[in-house]
Amino acid sequence: MSTTIAETQLSSAQLLSGVVTATATAVETNRAAALVGIETVTTLVTGTTTEVSVRTGGHEFTIDEPPALAGKNVGASPVEHLLASLGSCQVITYQVWAAKLGITLDSVEVTLTGEIDVQGFFGLDPDIRPGFQWIGVAVRITGPETDQRYAELTKAVDEHCPVLDVITVGVPVHSKFSYNGR
Image (cartoon, rainbow, N blue to C red; front, side, top):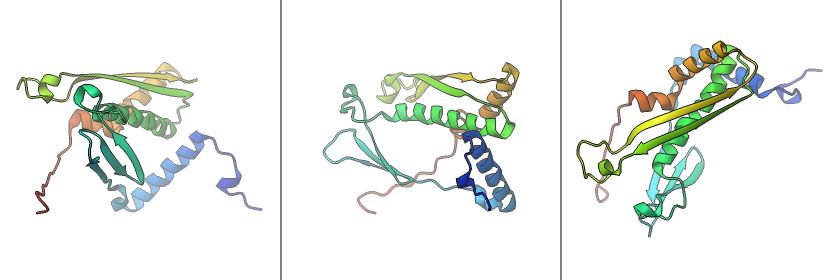
């Protein structure tokens, strides 16, 4: 009798390690498979000032602003989503690289803080950028490994986290516009 993966109980680390290995093998065999296209469609909800409907990857959610920015706070704000994207990408990248490096993690928690000076957003001071003035990242890891092994893991995460890369290095943005259906 053969045993399939579904019939065995794999730990999450074993499952992730298998996926990482299979993906690496597939990409090494076909480099074109490494490019993953992502699309997100955002639309202002009719009759609102700041509520935005988001569709991406088969998911739908709402982004909004707090009342101080004319919103109704029915969803996290865009900048809260940015911090959430960075934090969740860091957690996932810790998991992937722990599997790649054979490092055991009991838990990983990433807390992000940041500060925005709204003078930049509202155009009140041209010398103040409209985005975050700074972002703080606090990572808490628990597990049986040495501090040195976790430092090795942290270095790998800092070098390979996609959202951290976009925020710290930047990425070209190519915009095109259509006005009145043209």
